[in-house]
Length: 126
Image (cartoon, rainbow, N blue to C red; front, side):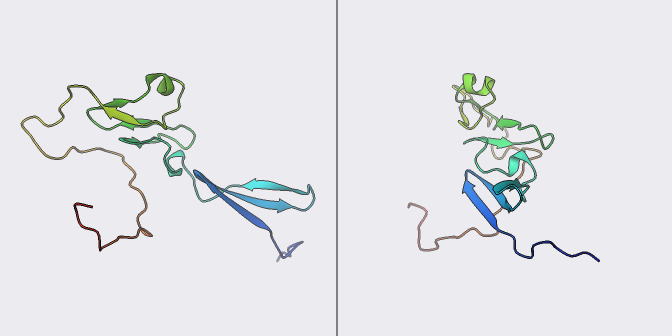
């Protein structure tokens, strides 16, 4: 068996582009960042920007990829590994040829929509 030294724990959660959890350290008299439920770089919202997706090869490396027929909006930022600006449609690029329809994108992590809300009063025109 074990016993806790202090039965109360002060926790602070900061939400700003990502989620960080801090726990109060009584000995150090300061907040210490505590690993939170976001385990992969791709778990952080909006890391890759519009028209791109996150496909992390491992937990430490962020790999943003433009969708087919798109290219980075800012090659300079992309070179500097800031891919939050997303992608833009490539000039003259047409993805659909004789096989009009959908494109298969592999290893894509879809957003969690378990708590998404739908406004059923809106029409398609709105």
